[in-house]
Amino acid sequence: MVLKMLGILLIVILIAWTYRRYIPVRCLKRYQISALEEVITSYASEVQLLDIRDYLDYENGHYKGSVNISIGRLSTFWKRDLNITQSLIIIADRYSDIWLATRFLRNKGFRPVGYVLCVSKQNENQPCECFPISN
Image (cartoon, rainbow, N blue to C red; front, side, top):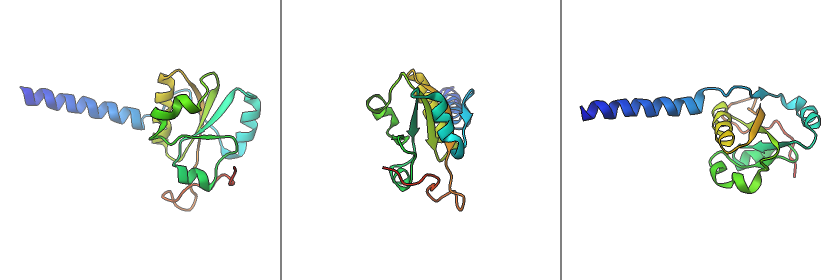
């Protein structure tokens, strides 16, 4: 009986983990990199760009004015670097990171409105080079 209950608990945990990581979030719009400047202009100063890629990928090229908090550090540094009154556009190189970050930030009271997926065209294992290097 105890083993059966542990088995059921394990299955529930796996389903919850899979849902959080791989099921898309509703009402989150995908933006193309080429249209990002226009989107930011339309939101005026009401939007903040959050780049959740690894620090090294961010340094290889990022959008001017974006804040870099890698997905692993988001739970620690969100309070320090993000403004809760602004909407967020998330920049990432994996869908699963977008879904995780969106669910976490919505739970904290933020309003993610969209995302930009930044994947290398040559090889998905290579860092994204879709943004010019900005400081």
